[in-house]
Image 1 (cartoon, rainbow, N blue to C red):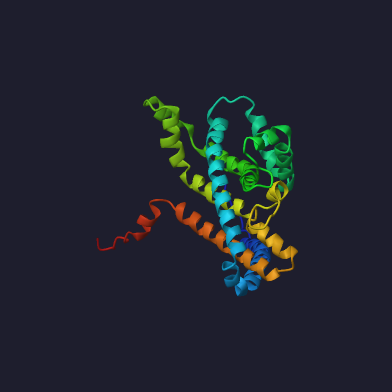
Image 2 (cartoon, one colour; image 1 turned 90 degrees about the vertical axis):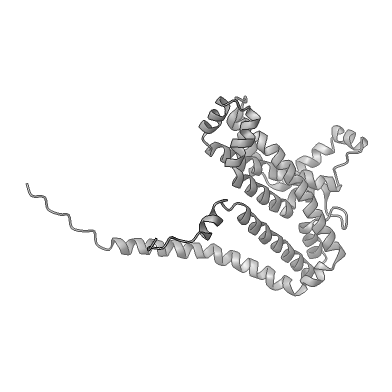
Length: 285
Protein backbone atom coordinates (compact mmCIF):
# COMPACT_ATOMS: atom_id res chain seq x y z
CA UNK A 1 0.00 0.00 0.00
CA UNK A 2 1.51 3.24 -1.10
CA UNK A 3 1.68 5.89 1.61
CA UNK A 4 1.49 9.42 0.45
CA UNK A 5 3.68 11.98 2.10
CA UNK A 6 1.78 14.48 4.17
CA UNK A 7 1.99 18.00 2.84
CA UNK A 8 4.30 20.19 4.94
CA UNK A 9 2.64 22.61 7.30
CA UNK A 10 2.86 26.04 5.74
CA UNK A 11 3.98 29.11 7.64
CA UNK A 12 5.16 27.11 10.68
CA UNK A 13 8.33 29.16 10.80
CA UNK A 14 6.38 32.39 10.49
CA UNK A 15 4.13 31.46 13.40
CA UNK A 16 7.16 30.67 15.50
CA UNK A 17 8.77 33.96 14.58
CA UNK A 18 5.59 35.85 15.36
CA UNK A 19 5.34 34.24 18.78
CA UNK A 20 9.00 35.08 19.48
CA UNK A 21 8.39 38.66 18.38
CA UNK A 22 5.37 38.94 20.68
CA UNK A 23 7.39 37.58 23.63
CA UNK A 24 10.21 40.04 22.93
CA UNK A 25 7.72 42.91 22.73
CA UNK A 26 6.16 41.92 26.07
CA UNK A 27 9.62 41.54 27.64
CA UNK A 28 10.44 45.09 26.57
CA UNK A 29 7.53 46.46 28.63
CA UNK A 30 9.00 45.71 32.10
CA UNK A 31 12.48 46.58 30.82
CA UNK A 32 11.22 49.98 29.71
CA UNK A 33 9.32 50.54 32.96
CA UNK A 34 12.22 49.53 35.22
CA UNK A 35 14.74 51.32 33.01
CA UNK A 36 12.79 54.58 33.24
CA UNK A 37 12.66 54.28 37.04
CA UNK A 38 16.42 53.68 37.25
CA UNK A 39 17.18 56.52 34.83
CA UNK A 40 15.01 58.83 36.94
CA UNK A 41 17.08 57.98 40.03
CA UNK A 42 20.34 58.47 38.14
CA UNK A 43 19.25 61.76 36.56
CA UNK A 44 18.05 63.18 39.86
CA UNK A 45 20.85 61.89 42.06
CA UNK A 46 24.06 62.08 40.08
CA UNK A 47 24.24 65.88 40.24
CA UNK A 48 24.02 65.88 44.05
CA UNK A 49 25.95 62.68 44.69
CA UNK A 50 29.11 64.46 45.86
CA UNK A 51 27.13 66.45 48.41
CA UNK A 52 25.49 63.30 49.74
CA UNK A 53 28.78 61.42 50.00
CA UNK A 54 30.30 64.28 52.03
CA UNK A 55 27.26 64.52 54.32
CA UNK A 56 27.84 63.13 57.81
CA UNK A 57 24.20 62.06 58.08
CA UNK A 58 24.23 60.09 54.82
CA UNK A 59 27.55 58.46 55.71
CA UNK A 60 26.11 57.47 59.09
CA UNK A 61 23.06 55.92 57.45
CA UNK A 62 25.31 54.06 55.01
CA UNK A 63 27.46 52.65 57.81
CA UNK A 64 24.37 51.72 59.81
CA UNK A 65 22.82 49.93 56.84
CA UNK A 66 26.00 48.03 55.98
CA UNK A 67 26.67 46.99 59.59
CA UNK A 68 23.13 45.87 60.45
CA UNK A 69 22.61 44.14 57.11
CA UNK A 70 25.88 42.22 57.44
CA UNK A 71 25.02 41.05 60.96
CA UNK A 72 21.44 40.08 60.07
CA UNK A 73 22.58 38.27 56.90
CA UNK A 74 25.15 36.25 58.84
CA UNK A 75 22.45 35.30 61.36
CA UNK A 76 20.08 34.39 58.52
CA UNK A 77 22.58 31.96 57.03
CA UNK A 78 23.53 30.50 60.40
CA UNK A 79 19.84 29.74 60.98
CA UNK A 80 18.76 28.95 57.40
CA UNK A 81 21.39 26.28 56.67
CA UNK A 82 20.58 23.93 59.59
CA UNK A 83 16.87 24.67 59.24
CA UNK A 84 16.87 23.68 55.56
CA UNK A 85 18.86 20.55 56.45
CA UNK A 86 16.31 19.64 59.14
CA UNK A 87 13.44 20.11 56.69
CA UNK A 88 15.03 18.05 53.91
CA UNK A 89 17.33 15.46 55.55
CA UNK A 90 15.75 14.56 58.90
CA UNK A 91 12.52 13.11 60.25
CA UNK A 92 11.57 16.39 61.86
CA UNK A 93 7.92 16.31 63.00
CA UNK A 94 5.39 18.67 61.41
CA UNK A 95 7.69 19.62 58.54
CA UNK A 96 4.80 20.50 56.25
CA UNK A 97 3.29 22.79 58.85
CA UNK A 98 6.66 24.43 59.49
CA UNK A 99 7.21 25.10 55.77
CA UNK A 100 3.72 26.55 55.49
CA UNK A 101 4.45 28.81 58.46
CA UNK A 102 7.62 30.07 56.74
CA UNK A 103 5.74 30.80 53.52
CA UNK A 104 3.00 32.56 55.46
CA UNK A 105 5.46 35.08 56.89
CA UNK A 106 6.78 35.75 53.38
CA UNK A 107 3.31 36.83 52.27
CA UNK A 108 2.76 39.28 55.14
CA UNK A 109 3.52 42.98 54.69
CA UNK A 110 6.80 43.99 56.30
CA UNK A 111 5.14 46.66 58.38
CA UNK A 112 2.92 43.95 59.94
CA UNK A 113 6.01 41.89 60.82
CA UNK A 114 7.56 44.97 62.39
CA UNK A 115 4.39 45.60 64.37
CA UNK A 116 4.51 42.01 65.64
CA UNK A 117 8.09 42.55 66.81
CA UNK A 118 7.05 45.79 68.49
CA UNK A 119 4.35 43.96 70.44
CA UNK A 120 6.76 41.15 71.36
CA UNK A 121 9.49 43.42 72.71
CA UNK A 122 6.95 45.72 74.40
CA UNK A 123 5.48 42.81 76.34
CA UNK A 124 6.51 42.02 79.95
CA UNK A 125 9.09 39.56 78.62
CA UNK A 126 10.53 42.23 76.34
CA UNK A 127 10.63 44.74 79.17
CA UNK A 128 12.44 42.17 81.30
CA UNK A 129 15.06 41.83 78.54
CA UNK A 130 15.40 45.61 78.52
CA UNK A 131 16.00 45.61 82.28
CA UNK A 132 18.82 43.11 81.70
CA UNK A 133 20.40 45.54 79.22
CA UNK A 134 19.02 44.06 75.98
CA UNK A 135 16.93 46.92 74.62
CA UNK A 136 15.45 46.48 71.13
CA UNK A 137 12.63 48.99 70.61
CA UNK A 138 13.91 52.30 69.19
CA UNK A 139 17.48 50.97 69.38
CA UNK A 140 19.95 50.12 66.58
CA UNK A 141 19.85 46.43 67.56
CA UNK A 142 16.18 46.49 66.60
CA UNK A 143 17.20 47.12 62.99
CA UNK A 144 18.94 43.74 62.97
CA UNK A 145 15.81 42.02 64.32
CA UNK A 146 13.63 43.80 61.74
CA UNK A 147 15.89 42.68 58.89
CA UNK A 148 16.06 39.20 60.38
CA UNK A 149 12.30 38.61 60.51
CA UNK A 150 11.93 39.91 56.96
CA UNK A 151 14.82 38.02 55.34
CA UNK A 152 14.97 34.78 57.33
CA UNK A 153 12.00 33.10 55.56
CA UNK A 154 13.50 34.16 52.21
CA UNK A 155 16.88 32.65 53.08
CA UNK A 156 15.34 29.42 54.35
CA UNK A 157 13.24 29.11 51.20
CA UNK A 158 16.26 29.48 48.92
CA UNK A 159 18.28 26.90 50.84
CA UNK A 160 15.32 24.52 50.95
CA UNK A 161 15.05 24.61 47.17
CA UNK A 162 18.79 24.03 46.79
CA UNK A 163 18.92 21.10 49.23
CA UNK A 164 15.90 19.44 47.64
CA UNK A 165 17.60 19.51 44.23
CA UNK A 166 20.65 17.59 45.50
CA UNK A 167 20.52 13.83 45.04
CA UNK A 168 20.69 12.22 48.52
CA UNK A 169 22.54 9.24 47.01
CA UNK A 170 25.85 11.09 47.17
CA UNK A 171 25.38 11.78 50.87
CA UNK A 172 24.38 8.14 51.42
CA UNK A 173 27.61 6.97 49.78
CA UNK A 174 29.63 9.34 51.99
CA UNK A 175 27.96 7.95 55.10
CA UNK A 176 28.68 4.36 54.03
CA UNK A 177 32.35 5.36 53.86
CA UNK A 178 32.22 6.42 57.49
CA UNK A 179 31.38 10.11 57.27
CA UNK A 180 29.17 11.58 59.98
CA UNK A 181 26.09 13.68 59.27
CA UNK A 182 28.03 16.90 59.89
CA UNK A 183 30.95 15.77 57.70
CA UNK A 184 28.52 14.89 54.92
CA UNK A 185 26.83 18.26 55.29
CA UNK A 186 30.15 20.10 55.22
CA UNK A 187 31.99 18.15 52.51
CA UNK A 188 29.18 17.02 50.20
CA UNK A 189 26.01 19.07 50.53
CA UNK A 190 27.49 22.55 51.01
CA UNK A 191 29.98 22.29 48.08
CA UNK A 192 27.17 21.13 45.79
CA UNK A 193 25.06 24.11 46.88
CA UNK A 194 27.97 26.58 46.84
CA UNK A 195 26.45 28.97 44.29
CA UNK A 196 23.09 29.02 46.04
CA UNK A 197 24.70 29.74 49.40
CA UNK A 198 26.61 32.67 47.90
CA UNK A 199 23.53 33.96 46.08
CA UNK A 200 21.48 33.67 49.26
CA UNK A 201 24.05 35.66 51.21
CA UNK A 202 24.34 38.41 48.60
CA UNK A 203 20.60 38.74 47.94
CA UNK A 204 19.75 38.64 51.64
CA UNK A 205 22.34 41.32 52.30
CA UNK A 206 20.92 43.50 49.51
CA UNK A 207 17.39 43.01 50.84
CA UNK A 208 18.62 44.02 54.29
CA UNK A 209 20.09 47.23 52.87
CA UNK A 210 16.72 48.14 51.38
CA UNK A 211 14.48 47.04 54.27
CA UNK A 212 12.34 49.84 55.68
CA UNK A 213 8.79 48.82 56.66
CA UNK A 214 9.57 46.58 59.64
CA UNK A 215 12.42 48.87 60.72
CA UNK A 216 10.15 51.92 60.71
CA UNK A 217 7.59 50.16 62.90
CA UNK A 218 10.06 48.72 65.42
CA UNK A 219 12.77 51.40 65.83
CA UNK A 220 11.42 54.41 63.97
CA UNK A 221 13.74 56.77 62.11
CA UNK A 222 15.87 58.90 64.40
CA UNK A 223 18.58 61.00 62.81
CA UNK A 224 22.12 59.78 63.52
CA UNK A 225 20.79 56.96 65.73
CA UNK A 226 18.50 54.50 63.93
CA UNK A 227 18.83 56.07 60.49
CA UNK A 228 19.49 53.66 57.62
CA UNK A 229 19.72 54.50 53.93
CA UNK A 230 15.98 54.01 53.28
CA UNK A 231 15.29 55.98 56.47
CA UNK A 232 17.52 58.77 55.22
CA UNK A 233 15.54 58.90 51.97
CA UNK A 234 12.31 59.00 53.99
CA UNK A 235 13.52 61.85 56.21
CA UNK A 236 14.83 63.85 53.25
CA UNK A 237 11.52 63.55 51.41
CA UNK A 238 9.60 64.43 54.59
CA UNK A 239 11.58 67.67 54.93
CA UNK A 240 11.27 68.52 51.23
CA UNK A 241 14.94 67.88 50.48
CA UNK A 242 14.36 65.84 47.32
CA UNK A 243 17.89 66.43 46.02
CA UNK A 244 19.47 64.64 48.97
CA UNK A 245 16.79 61.95 48.77
CA UNK A 246 17.63 61.24 45.12
CA UNK A 247 21.36 61.26 45.85
CA UNK A 248 20.86 58.78 48.68
CA UNK A 249 18.75 56.63 46.39
CA UNK A 250 21.62 56.81 43.90
CA UNK A 251 23.97 55.44 46.57
CA UNK A 252 21.57 52.56 47.20
CA UNK A 253 21.46 51.89 43.46
CA UNK A 254 25.26 51.73 43.29
CA UNK A 255 25.40 49.40 46.29
CA UNK A 256 22.78 47.12 44.71
CA UNK A 257 24.66 47.04 41.41
CA UNK A 258 27.90 46.19 43.21
CA UNK A 259 26.23 43.30 45.05
CA UNK A 260 24.92 41.89 41.77
CA UNK A 261 28.37 42.08 40.19
CA UNK A 262 29.95 40.37 43.19
CA UNK A 263 27.26 37.68 43.13
CA UNK A 264 27.84 36.98 39.44
CA UNK A 265 31.60 36.76 39.94
CA UNK A 266 31.43 34.49 42.99
CA UNK A 267 28.79 32.16 41.54
CA UNK A 268 30.72 31.64 38.32
CA UNK A 269 31.59 27.96 37.83
CA UNK A 270 35.12 27.20 38.99
CA UNK A 271 36.19 25.64 35.71
CA UNK A 272 34.52 28.20 33.47
CA UNK A 273 37.45 30.60 33.40
CA UNK A 274 39.90 27.81 32.74
CA UNK A 275 37.85 26.38 29.91
CA UNK A 276 37.37 29.79 28.31
CA UNK A 277 41.09 30.56 28.51
CA UNK A 278 42.16 27.32 26.86
CA UNK A 279 43.16 27.62 23.28
CA UNK A 280 41.10 25.66 20.85
CA UNK A 281 43.06 22.88 19.15
CA UNK A 282 44.08 23.57 15.61
CA UNK A 283 42.94 21.42 12.79
CA UNK A 284 46.57 20.57 11.98
CA UNK A 285 47.14 19.02 15.45
